[in-house]
Length: 117
Image (cartoon, rainbow, N blue to C red; front, top):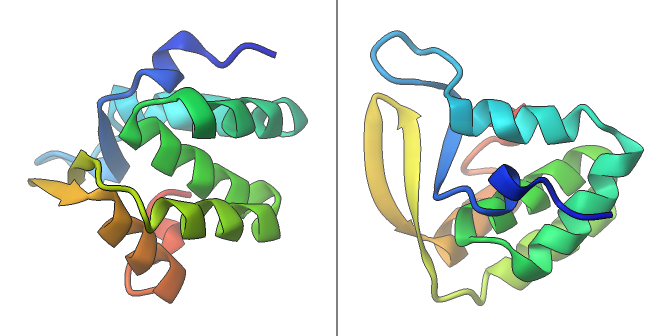
């Protein structure tokens, strides 16, 4: 199964509500569209973990946490060694964050997973 091209190439990590109107962004909606594929989504997430942008890799780990929790946690754990940076949008705020720090925050529940579901 080939990953959705737009999904594998996402350049930013957005929570479910961004911008001044706290709406779903196109970036977040792309993730949701894959997530809603259920079983097919698992294959896409697995592939993108190895080939996607830093944002797509984080979304893939988050998606796996929802669909296959143990595998998702393993994926997040692997991302804690990433040296990549990702553009992160939460609400109205945009920052560059190390992928490893976001993965660690998600694992420790300092950053709630529900921000993305």
